[in-house]
Length: 129
Image (cartoon, rainbow, N blue to C red; front, top):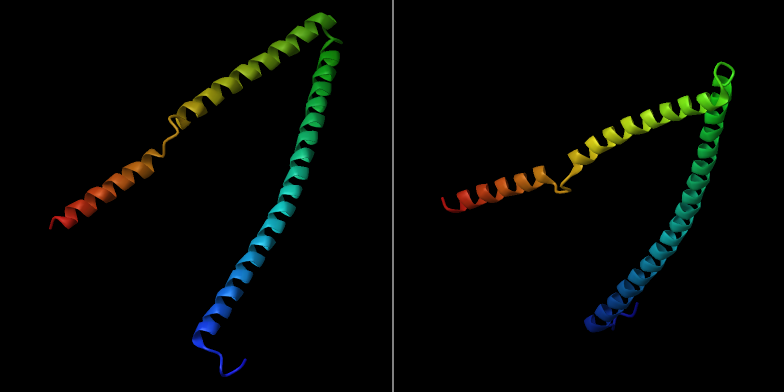
């Protein structure tokens, strides 16, 4: 660097370099997020495909159970017995889900709000001393 460079010029150069650095960092962040978004999209698609194949596998198991039970009772009765068992499982899962949803509503962070109100009260009390 030239020793005759003024402070104003140095500040100007610093400003330009910081600005260029910030733009480069933003470009890098955008490229990184695009890459991660692409991977997330592919991963989500694979999870979706896995869900479809798992669903088909589950249906195959149900069909197998019906056919197995049909060796003991008429096929129509086997289908109704397996259907009743599945509906019973669905009902129990629905009740358990309902219980969980009730615990989550209203969606307000009650403990955090209570703590903040206590903190405000403490600060007000100490400010009046």
